[in-house]
Image (cartoon, rainbow, N blue to C red; front, side, top):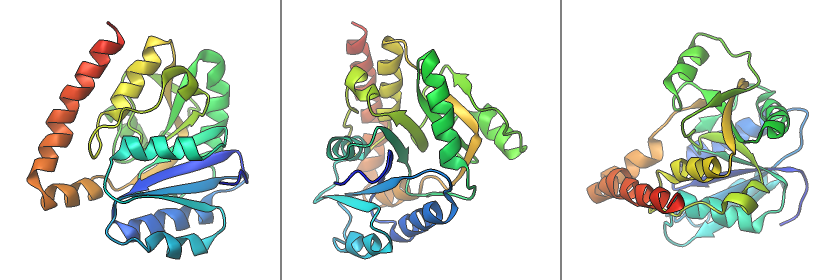
Length: 242
């Protein structure tokens, strides 16, 4: 893949084609003052031809496809391996961008925070993440470039420097998804890296659309994601600090 810019926005998806289109369209419509690329990772969606249609929107869109679902962690890892931009943004397919400065503020705050070993910065959103930050977002209190946190941040819309993975390793690949963000937090924590929220970067997050479809298609998937993956993550974290 060509390196047209310094930031790669990585978005895994499984179905939810309309939401992916909305997200991609909103990124191009509202992102200003900073170059970027988008990498869409199809995690075994039924429509094999979807990317060929959406890629026609702009040559800054690249795609990766899994023939069957391998989960969010595997999607992130494959994108990390096949891209080379120094800054990576992980974003959910059910997000929508409304503010022109969302990416610029993420990038500015992460560059600033790296001097204090902050290795991940998340946008604020109206659905997902620490409750106090969601409440501040709803109240319109969004003026701080960095708020350090002491709990794992969800990878709903978060930026990291690529070189972080040289230190902490790649994502754990749990089936379907869930808890890869929690393991990343503890892997960072072990090496002294911190996570933070940038209130100046805000995105809309619908939340739960893909998981709802998966759980309705097979009730066992819900147990795998919520219970079995939690047990795997707990064991992986225990080994990390053994």
